[in-house]
Image (cartoon, rainbow, N blue to C red; front, side, top):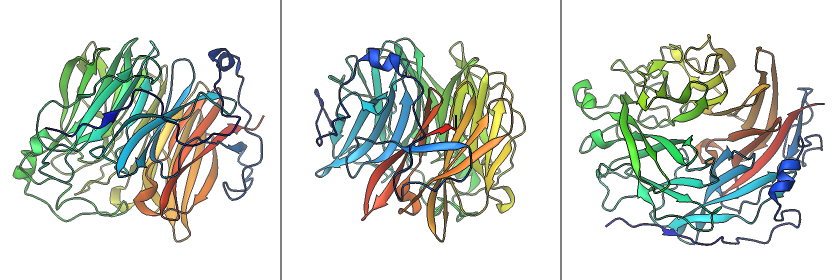
Length: 459
């Protein structure tokens, strides 16, 4: 039998919180105005004023030491959910906290699940999402019993109807029963009380070597990896993208294979657009072209995937990074890393018709220092991007803001961080009331910890 992590039925207080982090009412949330982002940044936390036109203020987080793999989402009532993975003794724990605004957190961090089989992976982030009925949904990765591969994992899903006090017994999102890799999940509110979910599914790789074996890229800047299995063997052992829907009883429906051959270990992302849910991911052709594809879910069926832009990046190995997407009505933004002709670039492509078509991309950043780890968020005025760079001096957290209708860019360096390599994972961003909230992982004295920043245009 699988080792099932323990579900907690009550919040766990990890450490005393500052007095400002007190329980607040939803009336206070409703009354919150645009957050101030004009206070000076904490010493050493951010770059000095660079005349970018963006004001920065540290965002105090209630996360414990050792927290990593952060994620952010915004609920239908405007609250921000931050989730992460941390250690509890010899076990991993998935936890979350709720930000109500004006430096107020709803309560102490809460533990969703804890267990030895709960997987902690720098690139494979769990998520917490709220549906319109105010239910919380959470997923995580779990190592199956007797896995055939060290990368084998199952996707577990649970739901809380009462703000995290109780969580339903988890169900496996992938129901194929193969001890193969499943993960890189996207979740979105499908209806008032159902959730949509998409993921990379390795059921076809059972018993075969795939990109986590001889053909995986060892570094994010590598341009080519060792040639793996022959094409005919690889075609029979491809990673796929699948999707499904789950209702309030965690009953599944709409299970479908969305794409029969994709990059093995690059994240997926989804956003709700005026044309329906839009899923983006890094595709993979027989010629090893690794461009970004997009597809809508319409009337219960997925469209034929199509490229966001034909970069023509030929890559015989997984680059370990995927795209990010955000939407505001008909306006959609997709950001991604690519390196055609060995020229690393960070690109932004926009759509004004709900993601049905995209304009030619804007090159946001370029050069060997680019890490392929990016996130994007939108509101009615702006598209916000956050990403990492690393050079001989170390890693930095970068942020850019584009106006919705133009290409004018404001850019700033949010922080220089101590961590290097993959341990810093993926930065995350969310927007609320015109303020961008950013969280990232640093490595201090060999241990991960989360840091946050609030950013807004001056004035």
